[in-house]
Image (tube, rainbow, N blue to C red):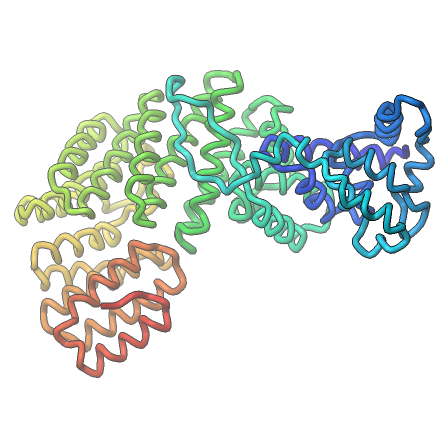
Length: 526
């Protein structure tokens, strides 16, 4: 075997081993390898099993106790070259190879190469179905279910490797093939994307340079130890994920974020590393758990959001990171306020206040006051809500301090005014809600698309309360345009709620035009 041929075999063997852990069958692995290796099915199956020609020849000969098979390497290479060259493999050899490769003998030849075989040989090939020998056959791969990830040793069964079904695997290979011409880098990206959640992870992986990809690949396959470069790569992915969400939304990002969380959890449970690196990696896990919780909340999957946020809390408590603990309480409180669960929202807001008092972050205290304002509004206490919002605006003004972590990048007076607009709508104070929404739209960073859409939806609801119907329809039309470009289910829900408020004017020309817009944007309406 040539040096390059052996390197191809080694790469195929490593990829096959990775896919077997994800419950791929030998047939599916051969199909995957076919994307990068335009060779005969016989050779694809040998590559899938990671065997040299000498090993396969020995196994074939061992299947014949009488010693009549006497297959040699050169003849196996001839068979693997057929039908474009070489020799046609006898039906008996195909049956023996089907047993070794645990497949159907018919899959070892291309469909249009059956005609040279006699009717008796074709019958023999058709009967030789040895796929039941494949232990993965009864456990075919299924899509990742977004299972619970726990940092606790007593959480139950160990984390399963993320799995991708065959159609998703084919889609992933096609996407990588379009982006990357180099075969080795394609294989590395495929391996990393499988570990980090599938096709959706490709967008995150683009931010890494080749050296970072190689380092993560070694750690994911347990062939390398965690070092500072590995941790920095995970931190880089975490920061980039937030940017992707701001521009595109949660639907395609959430599987990739959960995939990265799973990978982080496996590494933390499996690898020994210096304490300083473990602290950074655990912090990355906690932050990714917060992001996963927020994304699930934005998809209105409250149960999944709560699980992820609580898992992030456990990691933050292990770290004794007061800022991250308070931040996670703030999101749990914000989600409770959105559900109009006043008592729970207040409980989380006051818990966050205790942790914020121990944190050096001024922006965390600003967010905490904003969540407290929303909780008070949910409870119907307008005075306390207004006072808390004023405190939030005061704390959010001015430049970022040294104690403010990067994940609080989004907190600003304009963003907090957006939260206040929703509270004021609930308190039936349309004038204040309109003013807050206008301040939001005037000062909000353009990259926060969904937040702009949510502010427009609240603006429209406030205008409806003020009986300014044409203006309300105009603002809701703007929000619908944003929702068509962003996958936030929360934004779509707010638009539907705002449209429901316009029902008394359903017969007007403005609302009828809005109905048409909502339909063309794929949004529901009453």
